Length: 116
Image (cartoon, rainbow, N blue to C red; front, side, top):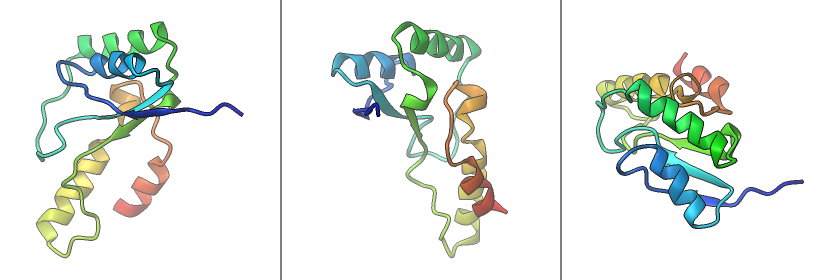
C-alpha cells in the first residue's frame, strides 16, 4: 500500500506553485486552496493557468488523486442564517476542480447530498 505524505501548501503566485512547494518539502501529495479562502467571490482561473497546472502535475509525477482541494473557510452548511446557508451551498457547487483544475474530488456525492 502506498502512503501519501504532504501538507497544505501555498499557491501564492499561481496554482502551479503549490506543486513546486509540495515538491520542495519532499511531499508526494498536497492540499491547496482552490480559490480565495476568505471571500465568497473569486475570479475563475485563466485556462492557461489550468493547463499549466495539469501539465506540471504530470511533469512532477503527481496524480490528481494526490491533490486535496480545499475550499473557503466561510462555508457553513449548518448555518441557521439563510443567506450564509445559500452562499455555502453555492460555493460547494462551484468546487468542481475535476472540471476546472484537473483535480478529482472524492466526495462529490456527499456534496450533492448535502445540497439537495
